[in-house]
Length: 412
Image 1 (tube, helix red, strand yellow):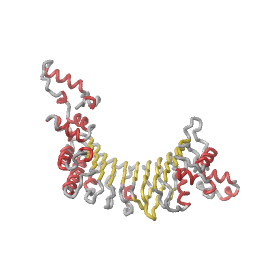
Image 2 (cartoon, one colour):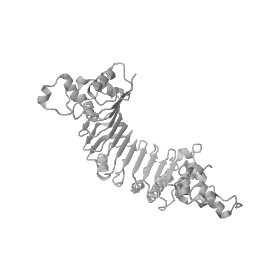
Image 3 (tube, rainbow, N blue to C red):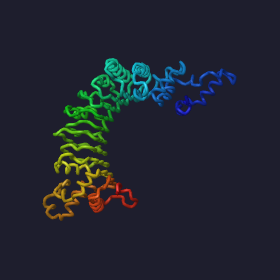
Image 4 (tube, helix red, strand yellow):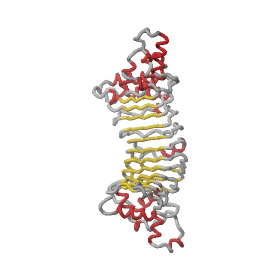
């Protein structure tokens, strides 16, 4: 096993060369050649080495000698992936459980920075009770070691249940929960007050009416929220001063779904792809710098006000990405001539010509595309709707960087 290149050269001068020199000083030039030069390294350095290896290789490294036996429990990062550890022997659940338990037995004297649990294939009807107990004990041990980044992947199984012990990880700054078609309601995350990044994938949130309100009221440091393939009823982002990134990817929605964005002064990036919620309430979105609208064409006829509400997201952005369907809808200025996102007075509106009204919508003062520097349009269709939008933007978006061809991407 080649480990020389894994030694950090900044670890208090503990390099391979220094270790070899120390061995020569201790044993002389004719010293015992069988002595391991890594004997002089502390457990923390050996833990750094095995933390950069796949879990199966890290377990094998810990069996090299007695000195290496304590390396795995000292590792600051662990990737416990059952399918990757035993790809050709899926029945070796007991061996994996024993190795994982030993790896997490480092105690509080060895802080754990990151833990990933990927348990696809770990649960079955014969091993379910033991598997649930192991997962609970692993998360308890991780909490005792002060884990800061936690990622949990549970397979699609009624036997795979998220244990309550993960709420004991109160030092978490980043949490990823990938729960494939999880049937149980997600517990409140209000106890995880230091949380700054939350990624929920395949989690049912339609029945959790107060989940987001409770999350933002307790986790005041949350700056990044990612929702991937979740089933959602409503998202209300109001009064969240630290949130700067929102990512909604391929989520499904209930019939009365709604997204509310209000009083989020730090919000800089919104990525919205897949299906679209039934309603959007967006106010005070002037802080946005980057918006990605990769929305698919609805299967049923959408309501026009629903799409008009999304125009507020485009407000003062510097970078904009549009899907083919969004290009088709946004390329019709006559559809939006009645929308006054910057709320001009009625007297001013009466004096506006058609072009000036459009400018209020797609380039008006205080709201639309006045700061837009770059736009990417995917797969401009043959109906020339994309070209119409390009003309509109070139006319109204004065900050577009057209001199070096970086402004527009996605030409046919």
